[in-house]
Image (tube, rainbow, N blue to C red; front, side):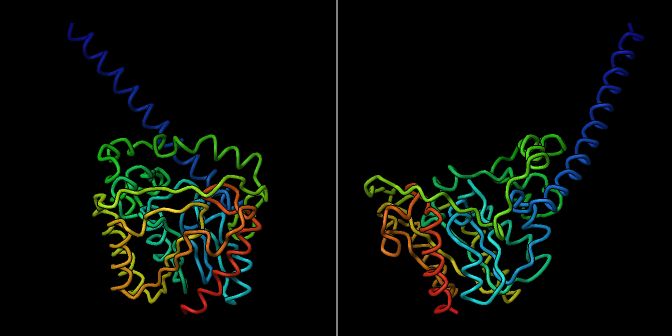
Length: 309
């Protein structure tokens, strides 16, 4: 009986050892492949490129609205400063932008960082809905703020993330796809949408005026501002156009955002409605400008930035 138990335990230990070795090998393999993809086509691996390689005077951070709305070539021409668009699809929660800022300023000091944000980023329900920090998983052990953000999203992550395979589980297919069939590298990260136009009427969106504030996101915002001042980096927060109207200006979240930025003398350039870009043919959908609209917006936005600077 004792011999059988010892045999079972030995087999379990052997199996665990094999799994650990495989996990380590997978981690090394995907780190190597990921680095090759970043070198080959940085715009498709924008998180890695932002953390490890970007080195321009101006950085644009945010979600797909950042990525689709700001043309680096136009901003460079207007401001005479090199520009890279580091916007990342689906990352509407401010935690991703705060993480990218923290990582890149550890490596170098840009002159200006533009955060494209949603007007209710401090609202707890909004932050929870768009809390997708899995992009940070494979850098979890290299950056303390990344750890904090990931653990805040889900406390069980600190256990699951010990596995290399888990850290890369959402990126297996994507990394190989980019390695074997890389997409065209649009200039400096900018990925415009086709000029198809938006055919719907302007819609109205109602936000809860007294929504609960996410204190973790508030702390990230304040820490980002403090870090920028320590590094002497200028910040501008921007709300880019969308083809809808709403009551966001009446929300507790937006009022607190305004107060924090005003107190710290950080500009907030608000183009959230259709005043700046009013033609529906300049939109791809309710939330995104198409290339024609983005080019128009980038021209006008660059002029607004010049006034702020």
